[in-house]
Image 1 (tube, each protein chain N blue to C red):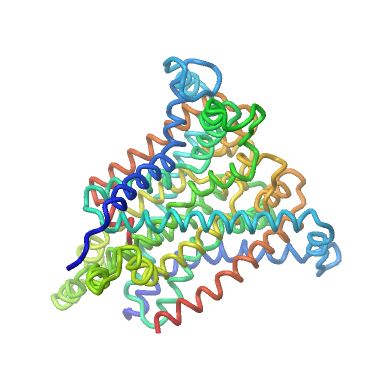
Image 2: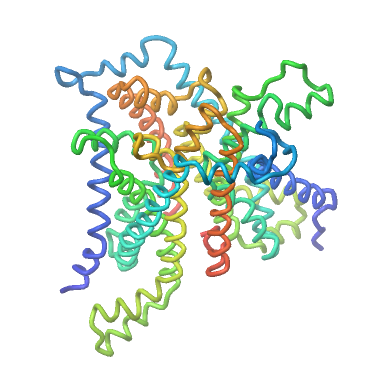
Length: 273
Length: 266
């Protein structure tokens, strides 16, 4: 047996599982989205764009995901910089603070937010006690609720993407900038931020993708009236049993994410030479 | 002369970290608080203290069945994902020119949103085998757990001494002996970490389990989701707290055995 053959022997079982259990299902989904009773049809896509209802769901998904990504970036960058530059003990605690929620089921974390954001929850009642809001103030079943919950769910992905890059930055570069007369904030803006850009980009793509495709948190925090694309897919699969239409919506989600990923992969290749 | 970081910024950094910690951990703390409340309504801060919701959760067949299903599933997924992912990682670490493309393919379940995979698998499974079954969930969770095993194992293999295997080879060790005495021990920390992640992912996973669920196939997260949709009571909080405690236990073991920071910034 040659070494080459041995290598393939190691790869083959996993490859076979992935082709049969991953590639084939996705192909099936793609086929179903354009399959009608009499063969090929684009009816399902036409139906999606036929009136304003589904495009408005798509638009809400896009702008919510964009805001969630931006907020994660704004919180995640300083947080991961502090993590990278702190001592081993502090860093361990910060890593725990990020990873413990990440490793906890999304369902459980969303439940926590349901309690916090509820009509008589901690946030609403505190705001009411200080007379900052009226009696009818409601956080649950608003887009703000989705935003808060999703940022907490997805922030770890941003932090871990950034941390991987910032940890490898040479601190002497920052010292050099400081010696040359940069203020701390100038060093951040002109040295650390540009060098951390690949991590920021990777994290943003990841957060946007996950956010656009999640339905558990939006469904529980946003309620039935504030629908997002992934929630609509889930409803079509489990409640209305309209699988072809669900497949078409999944293809639209898939296409949007692919559009986002292709330029990123291009950029990445250029950066590696 | 390098000027130090301004004082207000240091203070600001600590305040920021404290706020971030509150934001990240608040949902978990709240769930734990509700679970020991004496009142029958979901309230935080809790009113009184009691373990009665734990008693009720442990006496509920629905939760117990869901727990055993999730546990069985997670154990089997850990085994299958570690075997397939570990083997793939060893293959990839030896990879030649085409290694990059094959690795991207293996890691693609991480990039592709699981809702797209979930809907495809449900459709294909229904067309080929009919109603979804335990095997469907096992397959689904294995596919999404494999990339984690591959990543942790590859990270460890990248730091190993490649000449050890070369040495074993020149000393006349057979392929199997080299695998058993050299390569596998080199993989061990990565494989172990990957196995922990695989267990955790399967045990906590909700999206694939929701799409593939049927009345006889309700995992613990799906059971919790169902309760949250209709009638949340403190029993859900008790079950959720148990899930959080399992996660904490897994993390403690991982930290003791291998160190968390090592896999966090990889």
